[in-house]
Length: 243
Ligand code: HPA
Image 1 (cartoon, rainbow, N blue to C red):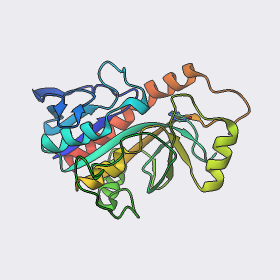
Image 2: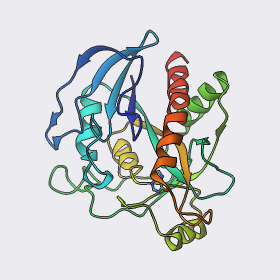
Image 3: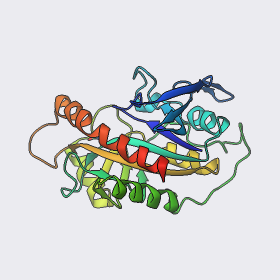
Image 4: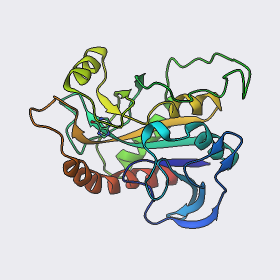
């Protein structure tokens, strides 16, 4: 079953017909919200609001372990994380959608593994290719089907936040090879991998990252881009369900 983790701007998914709301409690604490088992355009899916609904949890306080655990418990086998991001690569302007194929983790202090020697014994996992290629391709196919242009690759840099980055931080990330920057891509991706769940990210660029353009980043600009873009992300997810 497909699960969608809705990020900023997508704490609910318009058009969902609710079938069942799972509880949010897990052995790892409370998930951001109850997992919704619902129908969208006639197909069943699971939906979880990453920051809670209404949006209340900052990126560093999301209980990613509980979220992934709750989704697996609810029957998820593949997960699409929808993420608002800043564009580092100037060829990814506001309004662009991308399905990244790599990531670099700059976050710290987050509970980022189930295999911590307490909840589960230590285990090292392969994470060379952090996103599930088959699911990435399905997302790209779904986008093509509904006429949405989506960049087929990208390197997602996950930052701690909640403040946006400095221009120097973004310049360093660009030198590292990052093309997108967001605050929630990790540890979500690795936790999905640890649970054996397929995972891909649908990123929506809502601003040029710090220093990519001369001016400062305005929150109004981000909100306007989210409002404009989130419907397109929803169309891609809906097409993926039908595929
Ligand atoms: N940086 C980090 N996270 C973000 C940004 C950004 O510029 N835009 C949206 N989420």
